[in-house]
Length: 239
Image (tube, rainbow, N blue to C red):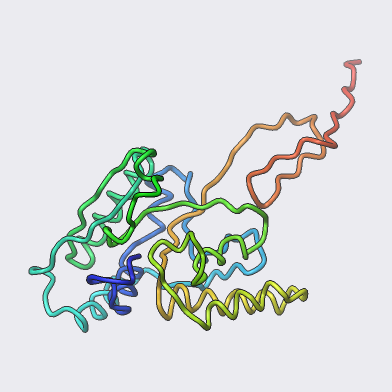
């Protein structure tokens, strides 16, 4: 979300948008290929919080929006940037539909080919919202939450919170799982609830077929499949 200029500079408007998108519909649209997200930290990692973020509540969303905007009829459309992958374009159209239906906001979708989308010359601040996806470099919440730290080069919209930075840094140094979990959850509350900078939409899934006689296949929290140590059950001859 572009927190630096335009309509989304208003925290209440960003909260309203977060409440106006029914993520549960995504599993229907993509035939269970997407798992609706709540927490920015996925459910397989320490720091996951199923109560993170704003729940779908279109009535409350409209009330919040009306506190900042008397009428949406005179507002310019929100510019939403997405890459040209088919599923991401469908996702953009879904967001466009939800915000129109639940808030009366117009959304203009900009679809870019990968070369332009990932170009260093692309200025994200030209857009109000951007659909992006992230896969962790290592199985820890820090690989997600560090994106929005003030000095991160991945923080495209330059959202900044001193309190958030302190919590993420403290979690890095904390070795006790319960304390780390609390620090990460407190950070997510700032990121998703108090001053939303991002709206998690879904968790991706990776699927594969494993023969019944194969033993020792244990998928990791991130998309690395390690095949070392696999064994095959001895076959039992027919009598």
